[in-house]
Length: 101
Image (cartoon, rainbow, N blue to C red; front, side, top):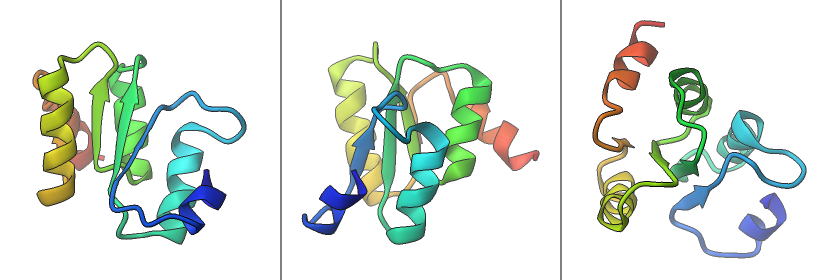
C-alpha cells in the first residue's frame, strides 16, 4: 500500500484492518509516519472498543463498521476529510476511552 501512496495523489485513505502483509494499527502508524497529514478512515468488521481505540491511537481519523449504512459511510468520508474525526453513531464513547488514556 505504501508504494501505491507514493505514486498517487491521495487526499484520504480508507482501509480495512485485515489486509495482506502489514495490517491494522501497524500499517496506520507507517502511513502516518510517511504522510502525517493524510486522514485515514478505517472500515472494519472488528468494532470492539479495544480495536477502535487501538486504531484511533495509531493515528486513524475515523472508524466505521462494515455493516454501516451507505449514508453513514458517505458522511464518514466527508467528515474525516473536512473536519478531521469521525465515529459512526453509537461509537462516540470510544473517543472518551482514548482521551482518558
